[in-house]
Length: 262
Image: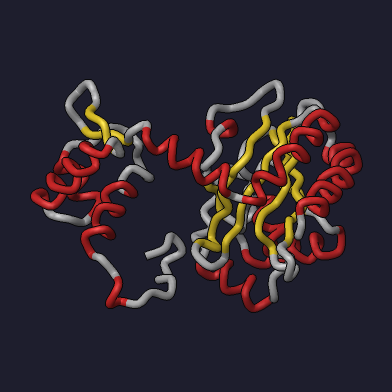
């Protein structure tokens, strides 16, 4: 099942339950990445301990799990290889890299590329490229981090390009839990933001994901005009007023997103 709670189209005759269970074991590390015992894996993945043992041993033998110092099982470094394979095979990421590096030089602030895929998980966006600035928290430096679509500046930029009924459906299915005291979680407030984005062509969020941070984003479209991601520029409120940040960086984000759109 996809992370948005909906099964993607699949021919059940071709569905392998054993593969699904192995993926459930790996996804048990999403909520807590620390090493786990077989009992913890079984409980998190919803399989019995015997199945957890067999799956764990198979993944261990292939390098997708590793044995930690305390004897538990943890994710293997081989996942870095698969992440690399994905990043180098994605045409948007290949096209974006030189454009975002140049944007980083011009802006002097953190530059991110997030990906949005409504076919599988429309409730979150995932960061694929993160070009750092002079000050960062740990999680803000990591590619692969997900953030809720309704809350992210990039996610809202993508929502603004969707039909109203699709936007409402996504908002209704979102948990809308705040990440900071300043996160917008009420649907009418989010709709107000989306309408502003449609008028201005970009989105911005002030301290909604991280206190002290302002993030501005413009959506990237595919050949059909459908949102597939966003270019983000992030700065510190200790260095910028909201108005000055928007005036300085909105044109840059919009231009970069336009250059990346098919």
